[in-house]
Length: 593
Figure 1: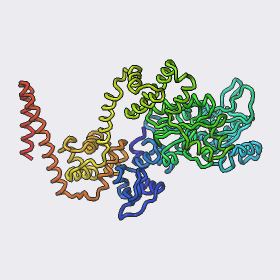
Figure 2: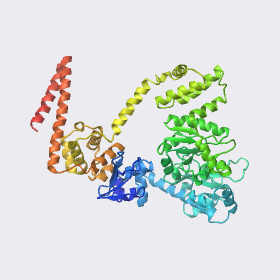
Figure 3: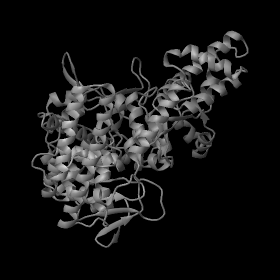
Figure 4: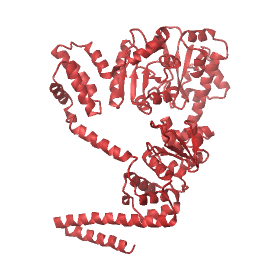
C-alpha cells in the first residue's frame, strides 16, 4: 500500500497541465486550458484543465479528477500504477507501508534491464554475430526493429553470468529473475545460443525473456521462456502490448496472435493494434488486460491444428468476459509472420477484412467432426454451440444466436430454445428472469453514471464549499447528513468524506482527489470544483446550509410520519411511542433552528 503522504508529495511536484499536455493539445482559455476530450468523440472542445486547482473535467462525457485519475483513464492502468508512473518520472522511489517488497522488486527490475541491455549490445555492438543479424534481416527484421524491440543474442560461454557478476549483481538476484540456473557444478546461464526477445509489461519494464534457437537441436525446443518468478508470470502479460496499447485504443480492436514474430512482423509493416499471447490460447489475466483497451478481439492464431484448438478455447474465454470476438482464418501452412513476409501486408489485411464472427468459425469447426444432417450429429453440434452461447451476457444476443443455430441445423426456433433450457435449466429462463435482471442492472448503472444528474443550486454551494474550505467542511459535517442530498453521486461523495476523510490531509482539490480511488467520486468532485457558476461567500453559504438542513429534516419528518401510520395500523404501541418521540425531537430542532 502506497502511503498517502507519498501520494501528496508526487502530486505537489507535478503540474497536471504539463502531464495532460504531453498527451493532447491544450489551448489557453482564461485561467484554464481547453481541449477536445480524449475520452469521447466531440468536435467542440469541452475538456477543461485547471493548473490552479490541479484538476481536469470534461463537461461532455463527465470524466474528471486529478492527475492520477487522468493517467488511469489514458493509460488504462490502476491508481497505484499511476502513482508509480509519475513517481518514476520524478525520480522518486515508491515506499511501501507493508515492508521492503517494493524496494527489492525495484532491484530486480534493474537486474532485468541490465540483462536486456547486455543481450542487445552483445548482438548489435560487439560485431561478433553478423550471421545472427543476417538471419534476422532475412526474417524481415531490420536494424531499426532490432533496436525498437531490444532484440539480443547470447552464446554458450556463460557470458551473461560473467558480465553481471562483474557489475556486482548477486547470484541470488540473478536466479530470482531466472537469468541463471543452479546446476550440480554451480550456476549457469539459462539462455544459451539463442536470439533474445525481451518481454515488457505495460509500463515498458523488462519482466522476462523469450528465447529462440536458430537451428534445431535434438531435445532442445525452438522457443523457451523465462522461468516464472516474482516479476514474470506468462499468463499476466501480452507480448507487444506496451507498444500497441495506444493503437488498440484508437482502433478499438486488438489482433491477438501466437508468437513473437507473429506480432513483430505485422507491427513493423503498419498493423499496429496487435499483441501476442505468449503461447497457445489466452488466459483470464490476459483477457482482463485486453479489456482495459478495447472490447473487440480478432483472433489470428496459426492455421495448424494446435492453432485451431487454441482459437476455440480462446473464444469461450473471451465471450464469457463480455468481449466481441472475430476470427481470421489464414491459408493452410501460414502464420501472420510468414503470410506478411511471403505474400505481403495487403494479403494479411485482406484476411482481416474477411474475418468471421466467432459463431460461424466455431460452427464450421464443429461441423468437421460431426454429420450435421444426422440426428446424433445435430445433437452434438447443438450442445457444443449452446455451451458457448450460454456464456454471452446479453440476453438479446443470446436469443438471436440460438435462432441462428436453429436455422443452421434446420431446426425450429422453439425446439432449440427448449434444448437450451434443458441443458442450462439451473440458470432459469434465459430470456425472462436474467433479461429483466440485466435491464434493472443497466438502468441502475445509467442512473449512477449519469453526468446529467440534477443538482439544486443549494446543494452545489454546499458541495463546493465542502470541497474547497476545510472550516466549511467541519460545519457541514456537524449539521448535515448525507441523506439530505438529492442525488446519488452527491450522497456518495459526502458519505465518503464524512466517513473516510484522511487524517492530516490538506484541504485542496488536488489533495482531495489524491485520496480518492473511486472514479465516480473523482469525476463528481472535478465537476463541482470546475463549475464557475457556483458563487461562494459567507452569506450564500449560511443561507444554503440552513435551507438544505430544513429540507433534509422535512424529508426525515415525512418518513417518520409514514412509519407512524404503519405502526398505528399494526397496533405496535412500543414502536409507535418511540417514533412519536423521535418525531417530536426532530420537530423541536426545526423550531429552534
